[in-house]
Image (cartoon, rainbow over all chains, first blue to last red):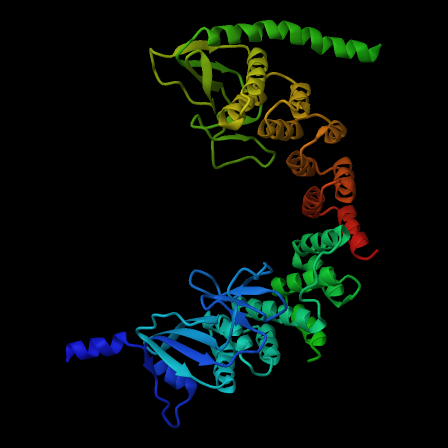
Length: 262
Length: 249
């Protein structure tokens, strides 16, 4: 009997879909590691180990072990394996509570022993993740943002804006929402990949960075002005990025405008 | 006339000092193997704990640590007739040791000249050159900024040593105009990047002007960026105007 239980635990399990159970309930029912698999946006690809590309221009994100869900850079991904979706939200569940979510796209690991797998639609995954972003008070809310963005579902910007504007939410969660909103704004404006093509561009981006390091009372108005100004795309992209990093509630209003959501 | 007189005084002093500094060198070089130690009085405001921590007394004061203002103690390691280590401490006492050669209390002026020369000779730079320069800078030896400027300009000196000399030059009493004048001698990019930090610590109009000048015109973009970074740290209105000017031409 004991051997049977062990064997069951060591084998990847596909959680059966019970009528009337929500995805959230199915996830919480399975203590341990749960992977929720759902269709990702067509543009997105990944290496299956945490590196994800194609979400916003050429930006890359890393969500694997040892990293936070929202670490990004603009490195060259051409030498990395980047395979299309689906997306996987790998959830750590302990005593009926989600403690961590990591997002993956691309090949699944060969060894999935002890992992409960749930396959679902993009809409159902997005609804579940939206609820986590909107209501969870721990880091899980921030963790859920990247897997939500990966889902082949409508953009979650209204939810992110509500979170960014909600002073009752923790600073970390509001910061994370603003950071993603900034990425979304740059993508919508078509400047997500704007590079510093000339020495002047480079200097302007550095000037934006330097201004962003000043006290918020001085830096935020400058960053807002630059974020609204289309004259120099790479400086604008930098201003939007640093505005998102300030965590200042005024940034949410600017991003809402630029996303056409006000 | 005034200029040649001024020039001749340090030369004479330098010559006389060189003899006595030479005597320190002779006494150190006479030790083939082992440790040579000496002590000398420190510049006012230099504090230490005798264990290697050194700081300068600032206007705000430091109520957490007692300032032990000297002496400067230096231990020089010798091996097969070469200097292989230099360790500098401020305050504290030597432990009793019969095997070490103790030169006792030496003149701080002689010590400064000796250690500046040693800094130059320790061609690899590193901690030994660092400690030798620290010993010279902390010695109660008057103005050594011309010697530091000489190290900064000398392309035969290790880059790290030149950077350190630049730092101490900036920390000294030489006017900002003189510090700014060193910039044109800075061939290496990393030296010019370091210069932007050093000059930024002056916080006066000439320093701000120079940083803006570098941010606008240095041949290397990394140096220009570094100048912009330090300009931003100054909070000077002219710096902010400079940023606005380049962002909204």
